[in-house]
Length: 183
Image 1 (cartoon, rainbow, N blue to C red):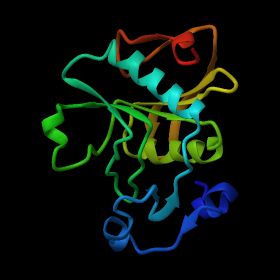
Image 2 (image 1 turned 180 degrees about the vertical axis):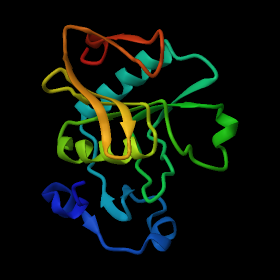
Image 3 (image 1 turned 90 degrees about the horizontal axis):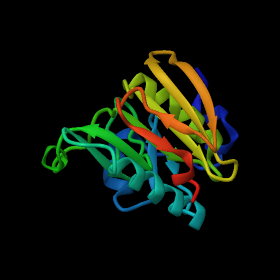
């Protein structure tokens, strides 16, 4: 497993604080906790924001209860609290009024300038039992897909490039025409 601070893009953004101080110190700050390391989040470009909204819209059009699409909401994992761009969780809004979800059926990160970090997050999401993880790369019009989570990461990875239809294995019946992501 790659140590987080061995990744130059993560090391450059790392802020040294104890895990106990994370919630108290970072309230309202653009940060994520990854394996006990506080990472400063990048500001969002128009491409990032637009793509994230397109992903959210495409999923909301197909995901039905008891599943819920969340936008930029933290996942409370063992030693990490990432804030994925979009995720699909099992439950209702009321279930998460006082606590963050502890896993997800699907997590989606938009990688305009964060691809290296988002690939490291695959290990975190797999260890948390996230069934499927997509890294959407809008500039390249492709999605890196990670499936079959385990303690050592995802057993299956593939790249789907537009034009194509991406069928989720974690969300049966959900099929996304990638043109919707990159419109």
